[in-house]
Amino acid sequence: MTSIQEFSVSRTTVTSRICQSVLLICVFWMLFIASGDNKASQGKIIDICVFIVLASMWNLLTGFSGLISIGQQAFVGLGAYSLIVLANGVGINIYLAVIPSAIIVAIISIPLGLVAFRLRGGYFAIGTWVIAEVVRLIVKNNQSSVIGAGTGTSLEVSESLKSGRYQVTTFIAIAVAVVSVVFVYLFLRSRFGLALQSVRDNETGARSLGVDSYRVRFVAYIVASFFTSLAAATYYIKGLSVQPDAAFNIGSWTAPIIVMVVIGGIGTIEGPIIGAVLYYLVRDFVSKHEFFSDPTFLILTGVVALIFALFVKGGIWGLLLRKFPKLTVFPVKRRVHIENFQFDQRGN
Amino acid sequence: MNWFNAIIQGVLVGGLYAMYATGLSVSFGVMRLVNLAHGDLAVGSAFIASTFCLATGLSPFLAIFVVLPLSALVGIGLQVAVFNRVVGVDPSYQIVATFGLSIAIQNVLLQQYAANPRALNIGEFGNQSLKLVGDDVVIGLFPLSRFVVAVLVLVLLSLFIGRTRIGRAFRATSDDPDIARLMGVNIRSIYAVAFAIAVTTVALAGIFNGMQTQFSAADGPALLIYAFESVIIGGLGSLWGTLCGGIILGISQTIGAEIDPGWKQLIGHLVFLIVLLVRPMGIFGKDELR
Image 1 (tube, each protein chain N blue to C red):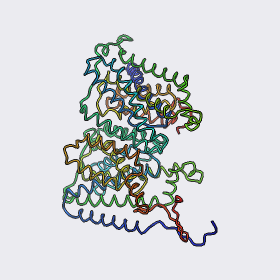
Image 2: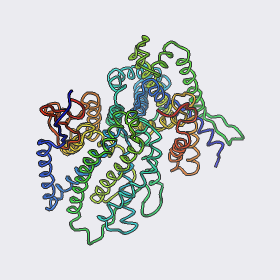
Image 3: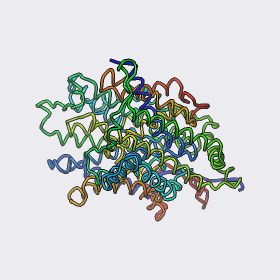
Image 4: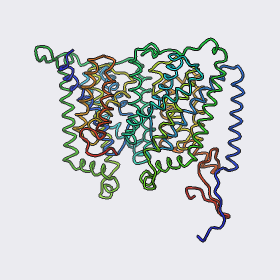
């Protein structure tokens, strides 16, 4: 190629602007429901928002950093129990305790990460699970009255906060979901995000270009534990009661999270959101039908995860992209425009 | 408290853990595959053995001869249908696929057999024991023979891998599948044999476990974790290390249970984490984890 005289680099496209506007309308619609007093719809919005955050964070680890975690329940449980300790133990207002509990969990995640990062690949995955089990057993064997050992405990809500708890929680849940998704988006567009994805794609190559692979991954791990526990704390303001076996349960947290991300599309920002919404709607639908007992639904969930992992690796978002290649909501890739030619980052 | 007895019991349980771990070690060693459904395959085999015994009225020891060939076939089937598609690709798809399989198996078992625990009744043999040191140390005859069988399985397996032609192909595939293929090794059949061995050993372990304690549909994940911890404590790629890892885990658990029944699993996990921090390559591991 001869010298390039005029070129420009862009990320945002017309489609991405349109899609983002549609998403923004959805957020406003959810805010509208949050300000009403339909508790059933508000509860659904809280659950969907919480799972969007959990799925996005698992995807940040697995899809963008190459860290496969099956121990996300550790941060869900820790988030719940930090909230309990701050609200019931210290006496902080439950709403104000959400962010501090996530900060506490982010700090706890540092020593946990130091242990987990001793392992690689699939063994890292089981290692994160063992760590979650250790945390569960420690909480379960803790006899203090604030923690409540194996039987668990309930979040105490002061009289003044009782009215409007669903409304406030819905607002918090929407805020947490929006902030998480926007954070992941900006994070991945930053220098740091580029380093993270380069480590995922080729660790040796990335390191030879001066990327500190251990550090980038560790930061992603801490970010994911922060937001995971933030979502968990939000969830428990709605649910109130916390038991160690439920809060640290792999089947009720990490299993659905993984299925959501795989169905939606691993390694994209849009995938986990689609997966979380779809999974929630399907679960909500089948819970009304007797044919789908809990085991039947879980068997189907497992089989669907298996099928997507084997045959539909890009998930639903990947299928959509194949049909509409220009589709994008959160553009992370850069596009280079040279006169009449167009390249994207991968050279297509 | 009887520490010496706790250690003896821990060693005997450790043999069982090593048998659980063997398959995990083989499938990781040969095809770099981490199978999260490993524990569920053990529980599934125990349920099939139990169904066989109930239907025919025969001893669980005879069920072994029916279930093991069956599990070898299941292993080959799973390898062909599922695992061949995830060997060598991005490990995240491996984890998701085997995790999905694990959830599916667990819930099929739950649906078929409900949540009630079951046991395999081996009659009088289960109660016989040897008494040592003036009745202070009681060694069950069944746990002892189970330990002997576990060691025997490991001896046979290491002879198989170390001395036979297929074993050599195993090692070649483990070192570099592409070069092995160039040298005329049929990689897919090697993978199928490896996975058949993995499922057969874990099925035997599952049946042995069911002969002594009750088991239920949700037990798989805990068994997977014990197997995994044994492999890592002992060091990847060393079958004797795995036996040693299983024994260390077993002893840690029985000593933990001796201190406080709630600490059985916790002490086991903590010992595992300490080994991971102090010696991440495991006790017998040769190089850093890859």
